[in-house]
Image 1: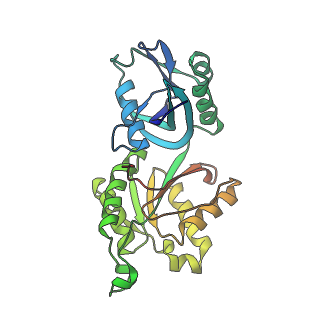
Image 2 (image 1 turned 90 degrees about the vertical axis):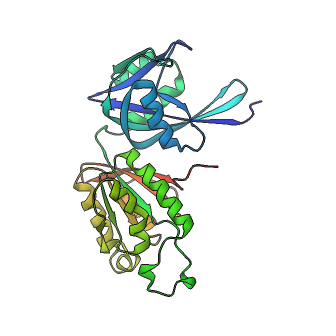
Image 3 (image 1 turned 30 degrees about the horizontal axis):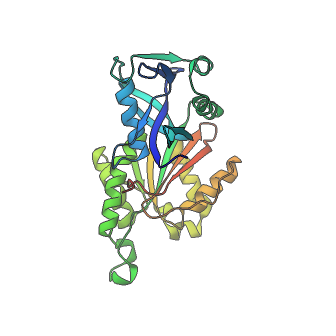
Amino acid sequence: MAHGVTAAAGAVVWRAGALAVVHRPRYDDWTLPKGKLDPGETIAQAAVREVDEETGHQVVLGRHLNTVRYPVRGSQKRVDYFAATVTGGAFHPNEEVDELRWLTVAQAREILSYPQDRTVLDEFSRLPTETTSLLLVRHAKAGKREDWMGPDDERPLAPAGHRQAGALRRMLPLFGVDRVYSAPLVRCEATVAGVAADLDRTVVPEPQLTEKAFAADPAGARHRLVEIVAQGGVPAVCSQGGVIPEVIAALARDSGLELPKVQAKKGSLWVLTFVHDGPRLVAADYVPTPLPKP
């Protein structure tokens, strides 16, 4: 009987029509880059770090692919895989990996040692490799409405909200965020202000993405998000709980994408993946909180 679960993360690392497959001399196997989470890490942080350590390449993450589970020496191992695009670096043999090969999906399927790795490739191959992401963030925790004497639009983040904003500041760059938008409320702008500052950019106000504006014109908010996606790059957009679930559900319906119930807890985010014909939503991954588990 297995006792406990070891959490790990990895990626299908993609570059110029080929993906990275690594050989580990300790096990004499061919596999996808992956490794265990360090204490305090999120799965996204671990995936980027492990790819760097095993392959020498820096990547930005895309959509979540699979969660693979299998027994290892009396315990259960859980590995979360992402799609990832190379942004730099070079491979050098190291203690964990002595060889890296860049292969097509078909070639990788032949060489991989484990069937669970091939299931990850199946999911990776299901969609085009050329996609774009938008990270849709719900603002972090703010002070209670009844305790705030000023206008509600000016209600600031609570201490817990500042911690969530700090975690988002560390997480969003892992997905290659290059510009930042926000509903023009203090709590929304403060949630992503650190991300914008690190990019040396300002937060672009988006009045159509407030709850009030959305209630008056739901289609306008949805169309504005699609316009932001169509500009290219990887935008982060911060909005409110009365906007995010309905906008995502509508985009999914428009694209024929089936999703479970769409939720949006404070400080959470959705990684929305689009293909360029439209653009059209093809995947949506929910991160309940960027804070690592204790």
